[in-house]
Length: 290
Image (cartoon, rainbow, N blue to C red; front, side):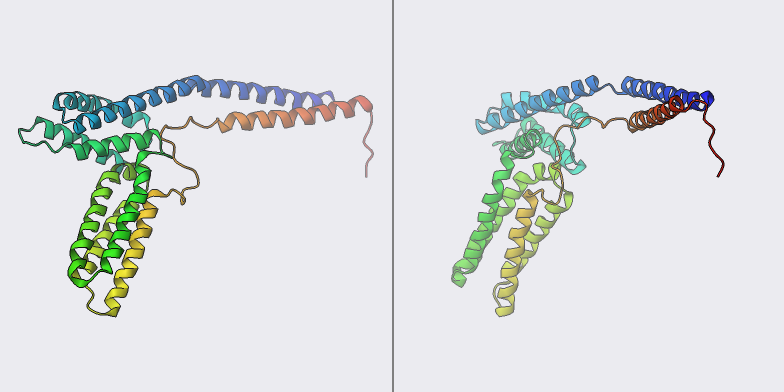
């Protein structure tokens, strides 16, 4: 009987020791404190990047090329570090790199005037969106772009002579606004959403260029504008995703092996305790045969 009690106790001790060693081993591989420090460092890095992006946009607005070149160099140095510590989509990183390169190329060129405000604005909006994924400045463009679609619809209802120019101007505004927010959208949203909106714009332009040849064509334009507005809204919404994606990489989850061993040790301890109590109540009892 003593052997029957000793075996569960020894197993319990072994599993508890294994649990502790597994937990220590996992902590030695990725300590929680180190993960917290890495997350804090990533946030500091992201804030430095966002500040440089904001300063670059301010310099572009004032056409201060000397300050702009200083800030674009800061962004070029920070970008490789940012990619290793911040979550984002490959298309978003590519757009951000292209915008930074565009500003750098413009500032180094001899052209006058220098066209660097638009790419600087794209960098600023992307950096702000990465730091504030739920409330970035780029989110305000949803209302602006929906107003563009509304102006296209109103232009479509004008007299035939005024219709084409007014609709084309509104569609050009929509395309320009999409170019501004494509960076943050590519970083935070699935790539298919920007591609869908580009295709909706292209298709709507084709229908508008054809003109209202008949009632069926007019119906197709109305439907295209409805779908265009829906594509704009989908670009900004994150409802299909169950949890909003954080800008900073989250800490790793707990080690499941250690929890399994701890649970097993607890179960073995309960069984050993029940066997011990039964033995104390009837230490020399003989189980009757059936």
